Image 1 (cartoon, one colour):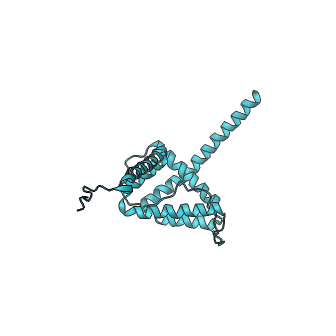
Image 2 (image 1 turned 30 degrees about the vertical axis):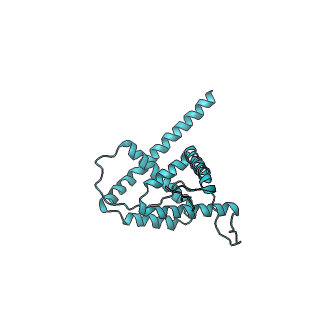
Image 3 (image 1 turned 60 degrees about the horizontal axis):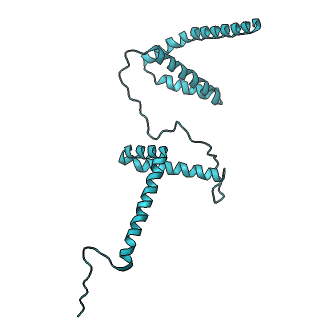
Length: 196
């Protein structure tokens, strides 16, 4: 008569039972290494935080965009204008765009702010001046930027167009004033350097 009883309570016999502590140690070691890698890289922590805060319906698109762009960057770095199959890309990916946007912006009409500070007006003027310079310096044909400005003006409501017209007439006087002030500063500096 065989008195041997089968193992109970999920116990294993032989090599399987002896190997369980080793498997557990390897699992814990892998988890420790992964945790260390994450905590040592602050950018990875930020990336995981952004992903966790991304709406669930947007996550697949977000990851797809990152995968596509990183793959293109790696392909470009490996061979500037060719894929691994020798097919020309026609582009050279050089650096990441810090101003890239994933979400579409839609401007909605709202109540105008009751007051615009001097600081805000200065920032608006700086942005307008720089945008104008970039437009003129990067547009090949004059007709192109004139057409773009014309399209924008036709979309302004009458009261905003009238305000822009008034500012534009005042702007000539203010530009002359700023130019004269800058010239006086330069001339003063030149005179001081000659006296020194």
